[in-house]
Image 1 (tube, helix red, strand yellow):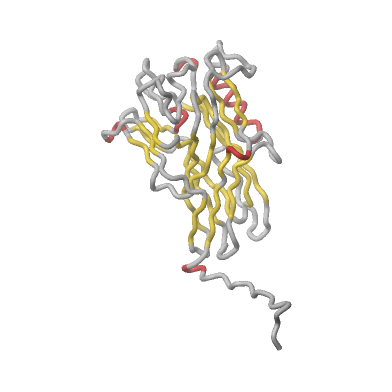
Image 2 (cartoon, one colour; image 1 turned 45 degrees about the vertical axis):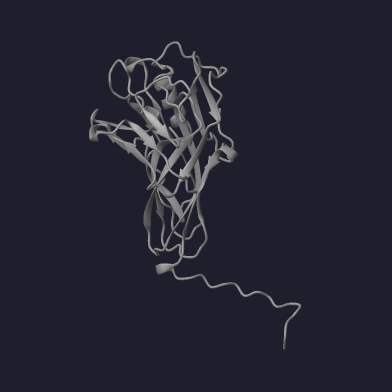
Length: 281
C-alpha cells in the first residue's frame, strides 16, 4: 500500500471499526475549528511534563521558529517538532511534506515522541489525555514514520512523505470529547487529565542535511495541502456523533527552513553590483 493511501486506511480501521456509532460522512463539527500545523525548527522551549517524574501530563510549546541555521559542511541531522494549535476534539491528523531529498530530507518521524514513565507508554498530542476508565493513555495507530531513502546528492530530486497518527477506540473505549484533546483548552474543559500551553506536540522529526550545503541558501521542508501530491494535510475531529475531516489550506501550514552558513561554511561571497550607468574608466 502506498504512503498516499496508508494513513487514511489506518485511520479508518482505528476509528470506524472500533466505534460503531461513528458515521462515514462529514458532519457539522461541534467546535469552531481553526487548526494550524507548523514546524518548530528550534525546540528547546518545548517540553512534556512526565507524571512519572512528578509532572502533570502537560505539553508546553514556546515560540515557534520557522527557520534555523547551522555551519556544517558534511551530512548531519537536526531534530525538529511538529506543532498543532487552535484545535478542539482531535481524533487524528496527517501531514503532507514536500522537500528536495538530496538537500534536506526527513529520515525518521517519531509519532509518539514522549514517554509517560508512570504509565509506561509512548505518546504524542493525539493520545495525551488519560482514559478515566482504564487510567492510562489510549494507544495510537501511526503511519509514515520512515521516510524515502535519500537520492543521489546534487540531483535536485523532489520527494514527498505523508505521515500521521490517530488514537484507538473500540476495545479501549469510545471516541468522545473527553479523550479527544484540545489546544488551547476550552473555557470549560472536557477533561482535566492533561494540559497544554502554546500548542500540542504531534511528532518529532529528524531532518537530514545531505552532503555539503554550505551557502546554498535555505533548504525547505514544505508542509503542504493536496497540490501537487494528494492527499494533503488534515485534522480529524470528533463532532459529537461522528468525525469531521478538516483539510488544511496552505495558510494553515507552517513550513520549516534551514540554512548552513558561517563558521565552518565561511561567509558567502557577495555578488558584485553592476556599476552601469555610473561606471568610471
